[in-house]
Length: 223
Image (cartoon, rainbow, N blue to C red):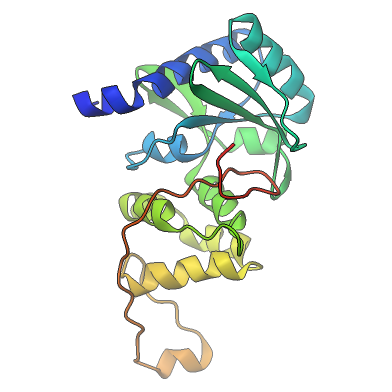
């Protein structure tokens, strides 16, 4: 990690190490999600908080474990997560996503990676992109952070699997139109489109990182 990364991201990475160690010692299964799942594989973004995905039956105990270690608890009005503050770093304990409750299968789909010299279960990129894209709506339609991650990680993602999971949402499918227009992904042509050589030119726009959390009613602020 570069010195400027250490200064900018040092606190969240220290919280990541601490949280992983505490939950592991308590025997609580979990998977690290959010933008850290992308950063752990070479993605460009680390956010100001940490997403830990775990089963509903483990959420209360996980919060207790973190609080016993000195973190400050918070019970938000949203019914799909609990929170714990490690100084200025927020740990989101997410037990329900836009696709339903976090299950053993969701956790098992994670990948064991070494992050900052520490082994941990990290959410697969297909899960991360599919969940993030399904949180987009007319009130929160920020693609910039997702586009940066897609550019950096495009060869590591099964995009067909992601596309299938977001097919029901126009905002998710619009993301693929943008990726194809920017030539991050090859164009998909079916039916009459296969004979049409016209392409839509898409100009990249720099903007702030997407702040969507993964919960079922996520808005612009990451929880």
